[in-house]
Amino acid sequence: MSDLSKAYGVVGWPAAHSLSPAIHQYVFERMGLNHTYQRKAVPSGGLEIFLNWAARNWSGFNVTLPHKETIVSLMHGLSSTAQRIGAVNTVIRDGNQWYGENTDAGGFVKALLPLWQGESRAVLLGAGGAARAVIHGLYSLHIRQVDVLDPNPEAIRRFTDHVRLFYEGLRMHVIGPGDLNAALYRSRLLVNASPVGLPPEKEKNPLPGDIRIPSGMLVMDLIPRTDETPLVKKAREGGAAAVGGLSMLIHQALLSQQAWTGRSIPDTWHQSIYHHLTRGTYVGSSDFNGR
Image (cartoon, helix red, strand yellow):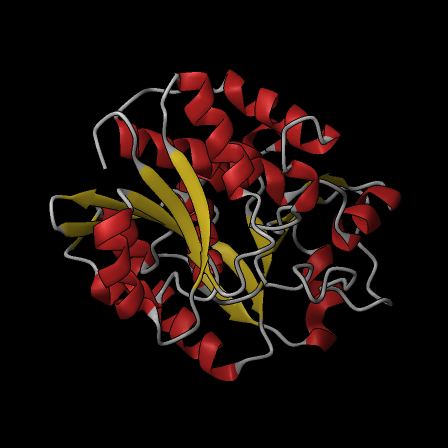
């Protein structure tokens, strides 16, 4: 690969649904760079083989489910943000070494701020790598009480242990499905960081059907789609404000671009990319619905 033409990509399992190629290819073209961006499907347990391949082919890449936490131990170094979150979504190549960064937290905050009203407590669905980035973002916004729900006891244990270690003063309450209604009515913010809403669960809502979202709540669904997720649709129909994950995905992608190229990117590009993706006016964008 020459300095004039470099290859980047996204690695996940699955990867075919990813919107990232449309976003990054748009940015490369607008920057006047002859770079490419591809998807690479890598199953669990296949990261070391993938990294050997990437060392010969890619200058950097994004990481999505289910690899954001697993890849941490394979990096030669981590940014302070990635180290604290314990998850990597952006990998930067320096010679023969890989360095892990996390732009999910920054992307989450940037997507949330336009509707932010200084909430002090949140309900969080999910306890994986995406949830760790959310906690980092919420902590930076001075939220100190979070109710978290995840059906996997081991994921909850690892998540709460991590939060206690890195986020002093944050009170984490583990709740069950029967506690959701009460939790929603004592909070002003609901964040879905679970994979529910991604293929093959595209039409599923992470909230049970009998759960009502209060009209004064702010809802953010991290699932990045060009249409409304079932959760976003339910929130808006009930009078709540809602943000889809596409906005966060674009923001974190622009932060990844800055890490790779060293170039500052205006925030105004976010709206241009969002417009292209939601209207299907950029080549390939209509084929994707997901990270």
